[in-house]
Every structure is written in C-alpha cells, then in structure tokens.
Image 1: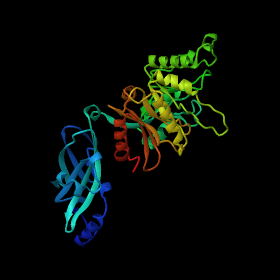
Image 2: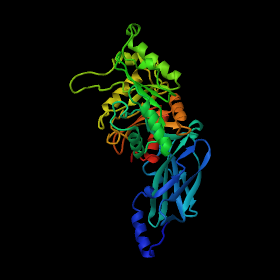
Image 3: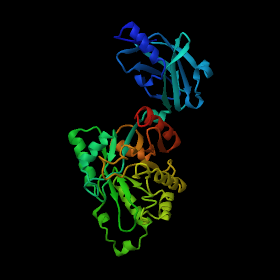
Image 4: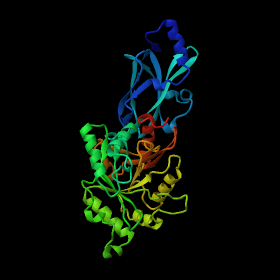
Length: 399
C-alpha cells in the first residue's frame, strides 16, 4: 500500500483514503517511456514526492492500446500480474511485442476490492526508431534582418521559453539573421540548436522558398530581383527549380513554405501562388519538404487542413516529401502561435546535421496544437501515432 512518510499514522490513513479515490499518475514517474519492440525490457514506477513511497504488492496490467478497455481488471484478468514494491518503487519486465502505445494500469487490493493507483502509458518502437530521439522546433521565422521586428537574440530567447529544441531563422533574402542567432547560442552556450536558414522570394512569382541547413547563402545573382531578358522567358516552375538546385549545391534542403498563404483574404486580394504551380512542383517533387502547418492565426485550422489537402492530393505524401510545421513569426516573443506550430523530428542528436538528415529521410511530423486537449499531426502514420504520445507524455503539450 501507499506509505506517507513524516505524518501521524491517523493522518496518513485519512490522506490515503482520499488518495485512493483518484488516478495518481501525476505523482509518479514511469521510466523509460520509450521501449524497444520485440524484446523484454524493464518498466519502473516511482514517486516524484519524497513523502510518498510504494510498499507491498500491487496488481499491474499492461495492454496494447488498440485492445484496451475502460474496465481493464474485469476484461483482462489474464494480463494482471502481481508486483512487489522494492525500495519504494515498482519494477517489472515486459515483452512489448509490436510497435504501438501500451496502457499500464496499477491497482492495490483493499478491503472492498481494488483501488486504482494510476493509469499511464509507454510506447514501444521498432529498431529503426528506438535509436532516435524526438525533438521539436520551429523551421520558419523572421528577425530585424528582414521584415521581423525582433533581434536574432530575442527570437532565440523566446524559442527557449517556448521549450523548443531547435529554431531556424529564415529572413527574406538574408542569411545574416540565422548566422547571428547561431553566434548568440554558441557564445552564451544556450540550450537550443540554430538551423541555418533563409527565405527566398523574387518578382517572378509569389512562391517563397526556404533553405535549411545550407553552408552559405545563395550566390549574389539570386538576390538580383531585376530579371534579365533570358530570365524573363523562364516559367515560374523553372525559376523555382533553379533556386532549389542551388540550395542543394550548398548542402541544404528546400522547403515550399505556406503554399496557401492567405486562402481567403479580407479585402478579396488573392496573394497565393497559383494552385497549378503548386501542383506541378509537388508532383515533380522539386522540394525536399512542404510546410503543412504554417503561420496561420492562432484559432485558424482551416489553412492547415487546406495545405495538407493540397500536399496529399498532389502527390507530396509524407513518404516522399517531408511534412513540416512552423510559425513564420515576425514577432516571436508575443506571437500566440509560437510553441503551438512546430515540427517534431526523430533524430540521433539535436544537431543541425542530424535534424537536416531527419528531414531528408522524412522522419518529421508537422504539429498544430489546437488547444489543451488536441493536436493535429501530419506525417507518416506510425510517426504521427508516436508524435501524439510524445506530445502528451514527454513534451506535455496536451493533456
């Protein structure tokens, strides 16, 4: 049974009776949260509070999520195991047979039956994902080096407050913002990774193109927004391909950003790229990635859904084109979507090199936090399922 240290016996029994009435998962840690599928591993449950310890024998049930029922101890009696507490904690071995979430229910015997201790969950993944770690970050934002109104240092500090693992500064036709942000992080040894970035635009088309992870900016000729006679003959698709090829030569990945910039503008002025151009570029897989979640207003989920619809309909499924989430923020410290629109990557480390590698290998999920209970996740289904678990149990972004 639960033991409450440091209080009188009568008080301890009263507190314990109240404690039995509710799920006590918030008072306990379950480690590790990610397990390898197909092999035995050990799950440990221990209290977060010094004054609470586990004593005696508990009933533990582990059930794959898609077989879980609301009243587990009546349905899955063959899956119940007795586990003896040791040193104030519970530890037990379990074979997680397949990749998915597993519900864990722990109860203790009381005079009139069973009392719930906690309900929680862990996740089992196959070998290719078990060696990776989930990281979250914003891959599109601006500073005073283009049309943002905050400094690179301020953006970095705000991203840390949003508990992001990485940030890409992508000023318009300007590489300096990301370089300065990286310098700030290196000099102050801040706990965040800066991805080299830039957002390219031209007078040829409304298409905006992001470069991520490139070792240098584009050649000066790409900044010349006055087209030559030869360039005037080029189609918007041809120009876009030129940009993406140059990004690749510089070691970066190319991103189609906000394909539906403002799908319904208040004054009726349409500023989006023609859908026919989006279709051609996505079908030809010109880009390494596409922003599915972008800088739409805080309560707008329509734009996210429409961008996903376009990407998926035009062949940019997440197995061939990485899905990304970002804010496109120009006011990071006060923008309400910062910390709500982001990309989750599954990478070996939180370094620029490994994050870019994860994007190239499509190990990304575009995330749009809707409210405290709901998050939209876009990517390969198995990664989206894992991402939703991570958002709730690891990053604590949803309840």
